[in-house]
Length: 74
Image 1 (cartoon, rainbow, N blue to C red):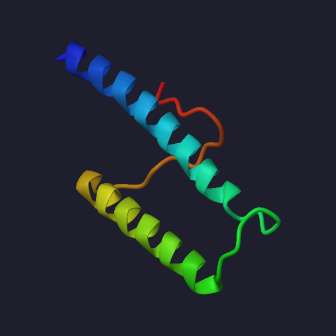
Image 2: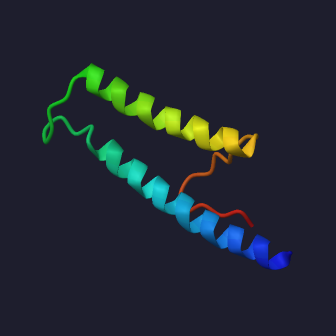
C-alpha cells in the first residue's frame, strides 16, 4: 500500500510542477510587444484551461492546493 502512495506522490509532484511551468508559458503570451491577440482569444484560452482543470478536479472530488512555485504534497 505504501508503494502506491510513494508512486502517487512522485508522479503528482512531477506532473503538477510541469503543468505550472506550462501555464507560466501561456502567461508569457500576454506580451503585447511580441504578440497580437484579442480579448476573445484570451477568453477562449482560459475557458479551455478552466474546463480541463474543473474536469480533473471533479475526478478527485475535492479542493486543490494554492501554493506557488514547485508543487509538493509532503
